[in-house]
Length: 489
Image (cartoon, rainbow, N blue to C red; front, side):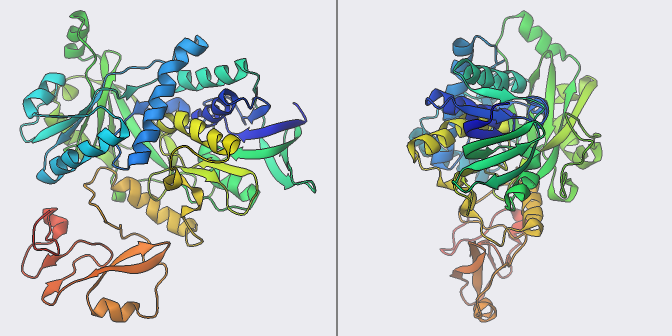
């Protein structure tokens, strides 16, 4: 292994390969990627490979759009297939609130440069004839979404970087970091030491362990997610015989999950709710775990399955041939930690990435831009690792990660602050302000009153904007609530 590099990237998943590729495309090829086993050996190889562009945050949506742009050009550039299926994505609205959310998103999509269409129930069924949902009010369709082969796209980015002169070292485990008197970093490995100007940590499930080597507590913990693959579905086989296009990826809040074609069958990926959610490697990834999976847990998502059988009956008419259940990283807000590490010059994080395939291309683009150019052409502050303060310890992270993924598919509202692991920090006036009707939000761990309930109005959720006048049903049950002006959302 070489003794010096301008940049050392630790981690050979889709994110690490994306950064290697991004730096190489910007002219920095004196870069070494160190992977403890083989490329894609972490969460990448068993990922579902979905590329969903829906994001109500304008800049997050623009970043996802960049991923799609990069992936669509890789095969022509590198000569390596990436398995890109541009089949589109269909999101079903069964409630008025969800449909309102989709309607309000349309102006956001325009600013992001995303193609998005609101469809009637009839138009949604035309795109996805397997769907038998009599309750839907409409749907949101993204024609440019799709799914990609995780291992193929990772190897394509690695090849693109290698072709430009970058290096990849496999079976190379990082064991420590030291700051040299000259301000550089000495990266210790089982294959020898390598000195560099910049260190980039992109270690996926090992983020907390890598962070500990650097003296950082990374606010991310892996969760376990699973999906099932069915035997051949006759309707899909017939569609292919007729030369019809692949159906869009289906997301229906009725079963809280995703469903897409996989070969001649279907892939069904349900989202576990908080009570059934399992974390992984809270105290570090065990030594025995490599490119492995864990046992399926059908009980955790049995209700999703039952609902899916009602909404997509074809799913229940065929057998199951495979289950895939493995870990991937999660943060408190379901966004990656991308940017400079706190307190460590020239150390960069690309950790806590919930969906490395979705984020790999764009993290490679914008993190390399930040390092090479000294700033970003797009506001990426929503991903800055420093957005969480000292309160984001392991106990806090554990609770917030469970909440984030466990409510992933639930309806969210503007200004909503989730209640788990609160309060962390309160002012001396906290109790008195609560007595006066404060409805609390949170800012950098501090409880902050968002507004005050009027006399005769009861705040139902102490740590949320939701409230309801006395004598009405709880918003937790109805999913609707009054607003300060008296109107319903």
